[in-house]
Image 1 (cartoon, rainbow, N blue to C red):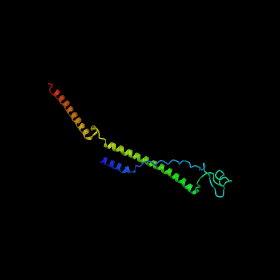
Image 2: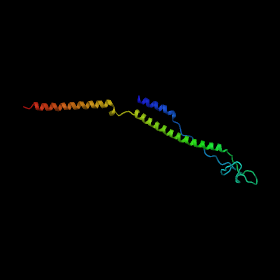
Image 3: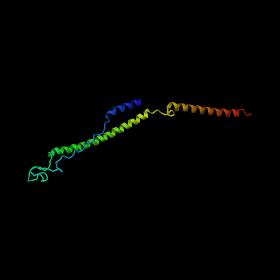
Image 4: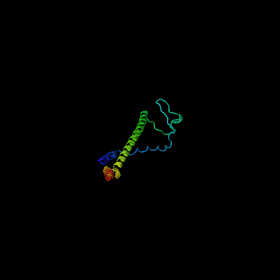
Length: 152
């Protein structure tokens, strides 16, 4: 019965055991002509001269201007993903510990007991021991009685 309970617990917990998160993708290779550093653009302020020289009016490098709210959203999403990863890591550790615990219980339940630790064997050895003690005690008393009763 105990073995069946352990097997059911193992079967129920098995689907919950997933794998780790996939690795984060590598950063892409630099695009030819991209800007080498990040620049901030402000409304009503001319862009830095590194990007837009005043003589030509054309940019010297390629970049994408991302709205601040979108960038803030990306930062929040990154923080959320890192928190989720750490929480998922803890859940995975807990599931692995539970799996190891139930595997150990299964091994203990499936391993047969040595013959001398089984209750039937212990009762038989105890019965034989009691029988030997009673017989030896009786033999000692009988021999003492015979020694004293045969004396004149």
